[in-house]
Image 1 (spheres, rainbow, N blue to C red):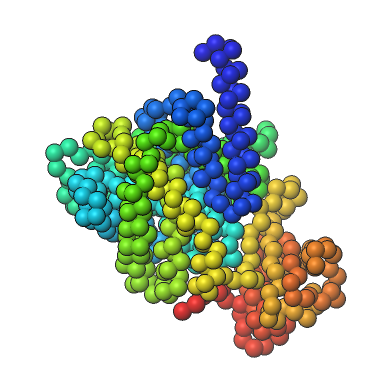
Image 2 (cartoon, one colour; image 1 turned 135 degrees about the horizontal axis):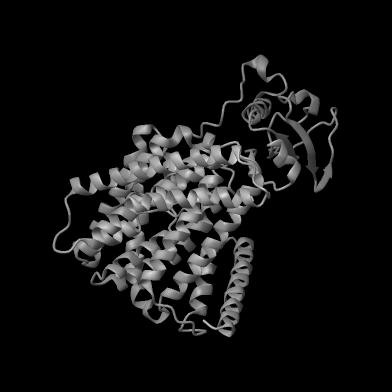
Length: 503
């Protein structure tokens, strides 16, 4: 590459990056998932419109897998262990048994409805079985949902990529006949167990190293943290284990450890995750040929309807009913199984393996992701409201980058006083928040005020609180208790237990 070619390449890449960032802002304002506009940028930049040529499925597979690793590391780093630790069993079942149920039901549906042979039907079922971590993380963290629902969906999306990838690889490399169920199950268990072990071990080693080694610059800590996640991903892949599960668990361990400069690390990881998402979706948009997509619309609609109305509800009901998850939560979890970059990346595996009909599968999956993301994503807030799952006064995490909070290892929380809450009429000193938790700001009718001990809370007030990881749970419990029973909550036996969700 000459210097002039380098300038042109960087000019095009920078322009595409800024266009994608502008698309993300537009998507946020109109309520669309960002991935749709990122894909659109790639399609527009492709050979059928602007003229950029890209048809290397093998390179797309390699870069796409690496991007997924970065996205999952970021997801692990920004996931609270306290939100998902009690949900590991149902999430694990949903991410393994649920994937198997989804594959079988989807394959049977497209086999009988579209006449697709069983090999391609099982491949298609495995490709679309995984929910998308990036889409789930982005959408759910902006909704005031019970922690059980959010944590379950986040844990599932972090765990189920690995089983789906293993199944796609098995079906893609099968030649004359498909392997038996015992071989597939053994392969999945081996890869998940070894990959999970490597992820946890390397995450713990990384946490110990980062606490004990003084680096010469603050900016090196985020790089080192991401580096440990990448090492976990690569080490697992090198020993034929699941690098995806290793990357997510390494990020989860590191994100919940007491590391120096945690806020800066999380901010850097979020930026790296966005860059990976943008690059991934734009590349996948470049990979498809728009003039070939119309023939894939009908098969994509049929496959998507089988997945949305049969396969996903079946796997959710089969996996979560034994855990006595209420039907409202099951219905929302079923609807919230968003598909995104992962299925499109997985669709490149059979193309690289030379499977007959693989290009048709890629087109079907691309159209399915676009159409059903348009249907499911914007409808999630309305679905949560209709099912009675939204919590108007739910505490929401706020990502803070300022140095003082980072040095103090503090968290910033916000809660809105909803109508009917017993927080109405309570003075600040009557909250009796556990020290060193402090209410620092009240936003009332669009005006910010610094509260004093005698400031009385009103309906609609937005409260900003600073707390520490050690006292955060106690502060949340106290706020819930006062919200339910008033300032004398403890006298009434109200301890502020987490919202159990509707039965």
